[in-house]
Length: 254
Image (cartoon, rainbow, N blue to C red):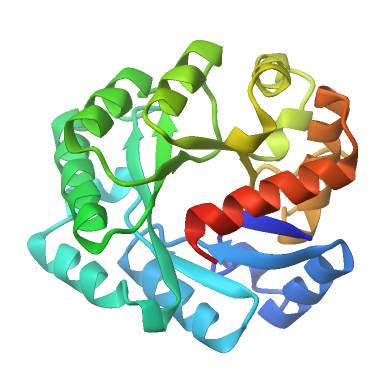
């Protein structure tokens, strides 16, 4: 069994298919659980709705850092209200910092990140962290707030950054971009870090792995990511599936 720990099935790129069709294609490749990520209030509500409708889907609620300027105390209260066990909400996320092509006030992102980490601590939920071109600020705020558990999704750092994340007791997860020709830096990290510290994700509809690159990504392609990690680490696919699934189940309390 495999788990897609980061999907956006509510995004418009999936308009030509249905959640049930996506789930069935995923199951055909051994992917039996999908975590649908809240990237803003509307997406969080949609994630909860999907989780209520389909037993294979679980939800997170959060706010992407590029939407930090829209964050208010009302947003925080609404996300807190959504984040109930009966809604199958298993984490706060995605939340974090993204400085890529960002000309706004970084302090707005930082303050929003702090407040959402505080919500996760209050609710005793793990956090799904979005980090792009912001490694040091991410580390600083995580050390300051100290959420219970966290994963840096779509990991883009080097081995030194990975080890600093592990020192906090956190995990990292990888997407289909590890199959891209120019991603040797990520493959080097995968080769070195313990398999037990890794989770798998598609971040669909983005970052489809080779041989699907350029197409819409979807949970079924977790299998391609698992195969690549098995190749990099020179272990059996079954071991990658077992270890990463156990890690995800423990992390998200599935």
